[in-house]
Amino acid sequence: MNLSILPKLLILCGILVLTGCKKFLEIEPEYKLSAIVGTSSLHALAQTTTGAFNAIQSGHIYGGGLIANGEFMADQLTTDPISDFSLNQLRTRELNAFNGQAGGLWGDGYRAINIANIVLEHLPNFADQDADSVKLLTAECLFIRGIIHFELVRMFAQPSGFSADDSHLGIPIRTFSGTATNGHEEPRSSVAEVYQQIISDLKTAEKDLPDDKESRASKWAAAAFLAKVYFQQNDYDNALFWCDKVVNSGQFSLNTDVTENFNLVDRAFGDEMIFQLINQPPDDVSNGDLGRFRTNVMYEMSGNIIDMVQAGMLAGDLR
Image (tube, rainbow, N blue to C red; front, side, top):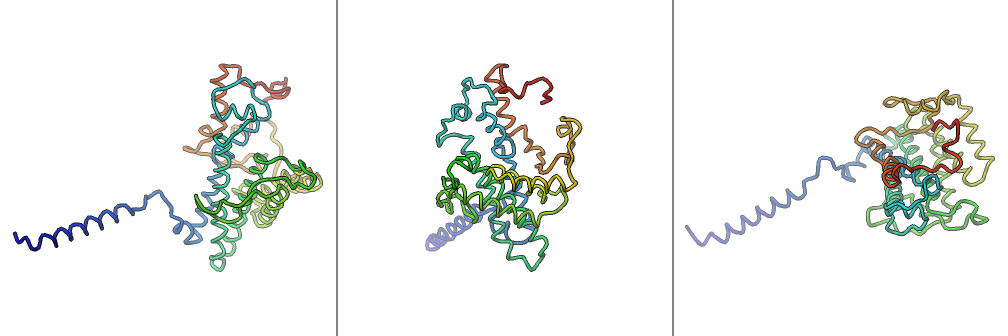
């Protein structure tokens, strides 16, 4: 063998190895939708909006956490100590930065808001392509951004009315996209400012969301949330206005039996349903915080689980 060509062969092999490794390491997983692909077309933005709806199904949000945590903090469950770290902190109302329930709600909530903001920032690029689709997706993302800011400010700030002008601290308002490490340095806004943003988002969304109540977000869903927002602010005139708008729509009526909502099959929309999220395997709500909350307390309390404070176990209550 000619030893003079050995260095050249070694260099060539090294180049091939480095090139091969580089290509191998840059393979994109099939399940991963990159930021570029996810915003590259109107169809991709529609899929990303679906991802935003999926994000609010989180076990920490509408998958059950908001309901379960609220019941626990309202003393709807027994006050005996339990071993779960996060739940016990909710019980004693002494939360710290390591609380998984609070951290999960905060992180998942702002993740949903961020996805909505990403879509909102890119939709104007396709306004000339399909104006109706752009209008609908904009309304859906504003709806998501509004309702999640509402849920977060209720859980992480003193209520409206705590200060005379609601100037007390609320939560950071995020109307722009960020990443895991950037775009999250903004300070907390006042509660008044947060509610102003929520109302602006929901009112804009309500105008452009569809009338069909079985849409994944309808104008009636936005109106119902506006009623809740104003009620939370003790603005009963506006709360009544938006309640009347939903009630007088003619699309809803009370069920004759309290169990009807629990017997719906697949994607059925009940007479009382104003807004619903469809959970299907593997994201069934039984795997979320609501199921975990109940079963965790069940095992800890060994049968003496629920202590409904003068309410839940009264005679005639069918819950």
